[in-house]
Length: 191
Ligand code: IMP
Ligand code: MG
Figure (tube, rainbow, N blue to C red):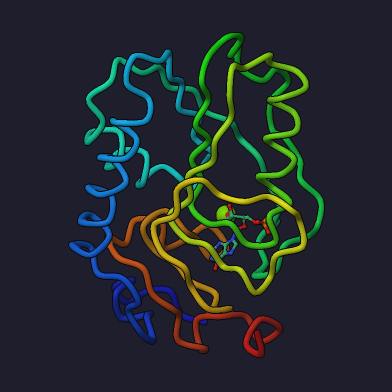
C-alpha cells in the first residue's frame, strides 16, 4: 500500500462535495440557533472525527455557547466498530445545568454515542442532551440511540474525509468519499 500520492487520488468516489456539506451545515445551524436561543448551550466535540464539522458548524451558530472536547476510541484502526468504547481522559467535562449538544462525525453501530450520552447523563447533571452527527449509517446500528440532528444518511459504506479517517489518515479531505481498495489493508477490502 503506497501512501505517497496525493490523498485525493486515493478515493474511489466522492459522496458529498464540500459545498454540499457546508450547505447542509447552514440548514442545521438555522435549527440549532432557533432551538437553543436563550439557553445555556455547551457543544461537546467527540475527537478527532468531529473536528471539521465542529469548526464549520459552530461558526454558523450565533449563540454564546461553550465548547468542550471528549476523546474516545471505538475503532482501534479498523473499518468496523470494535464494540468497546474507551475514554482517553480521566475526567469528563463539567456540564451541570447546561443544555448539551454532542457532535460526532458519524453514527454507525451507535455504541460510541450511546456510551457518551449515558456517561454525560449519569455523571454530569446536564439540563438536556442532544446529538448531532454529520452522517447516519443506519445499516450497522446496534444501539438504540437516535440522533437529533443529521447531516446526511449514508448506505453501509466505509467513508473518509471531512474528519473521518482510515487508520488515522484522510481527515483533512474537505469532502467525503470512499477509498480505492488498494489503499485498504487486504483484510478490510471485503467490507
Ligand atoms: P459507532 O460506535 O459504531 O457508532 O462508531 C462511531 C465511530 O466509528 C465514529 O465516530 C467514527 O470514528 C468511526 N466510524 C464509523 N463508520 C466510519 C466510516 O465509515 N469511516 C470512518 N470512521 C467511521
Ligand atoms: Mg474514527
